[in-house]
Image (cartoon, rainbow, N blue to C red; front, side, top):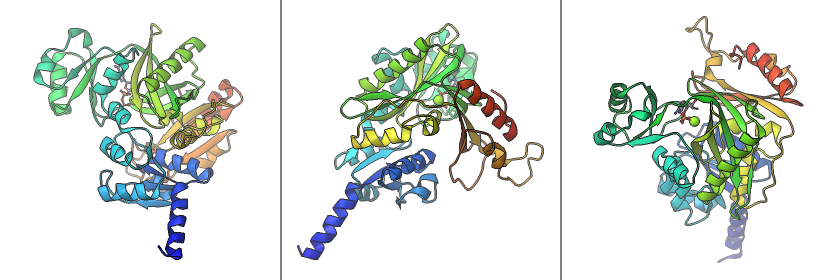
Length: 399
Ligand code: ADP
Ligand code: MG
């Protein structure tokens, strides 16, 4: 090897040692890129769409499918560690990458989280209560569904999100129709319809050395299946319930040998029971307030777990309320034909403690997550009060 070649190789190795990769190009990837760059890392994003939210912020973009062997090899050549920002990344790609470099979360954990039936089996195996359910993968399974699960919620096992791929069913006839027609007889899970008092989520971060920390327990309000409002601290539960939910989330991370950031959603029933709903092997929309309200954000936790950096407990320093900003805000309710226009952000930015996050998506669409607004304050009452004012100014319903 010539001295010149040796120098080029040394430069490449130094660059690789400072570069991390992300599979996926959405807003979660974008906020991970920001957190990593702030600590001096270069970020390479693999995304089939080279103009998405994460790609806009990345140091480099590989435009290719998530299972493209050449792109994965390129990623392995240029990165020291790789993470994912979306749940439906092919687990095989994570497994292949793990032959060459550090990957978190691991393929085996992602395989569990991306499949509702496997996820529920993991809850049961870990001793974490969840809704009574039945797996429906055949006509025989359909016929064998116990009466106690009706009325229920039928959910496709794979690729459901934001309430998509699920139907409420009142009786057997509706169940059969929903499974065969709405879900195309795809492998599914039927859950009993639960009497929910409120919904929570807990974001835990676990290092390769087994260190575990979690963000404060979040309370979530969904509208039409999509997260609308997150409040931290959670206003409608007591300390014991919050601690219980956090302990269950940590148990689930531990029992998967999980490394990375994991979000667990819970239902609190009217009788006070806490049931696990679903898990996401990545940062989560309900954890966005951590960017402005906690000492460590969920994205910095993702970076630290990925690189084996220390995890310290992320204290919440401000009360916070997060409002999701969906594309609907760009459309005039009174005149649906009108050209979409940007909301008047100045009207909310004049409120104290308002932090606006926009994801750089060019085209607003109804139901599309365009950004979020977090309001921080010294007390939960003040954060809620200001967030209600912000909601009113944006034309969002009260909560
Ligand atoms: P997604 O992947 O779309 O987030 P979820 O399983 O979390 O799917 O369901 C979305 C929302 O639907 C929940 O946050 C909750 O409000 C409601 N929901 C889901 N399952 C049930 C259930 N078994 N009983 C009552 N409401 C439910
Ligand atoms: Mg959910």
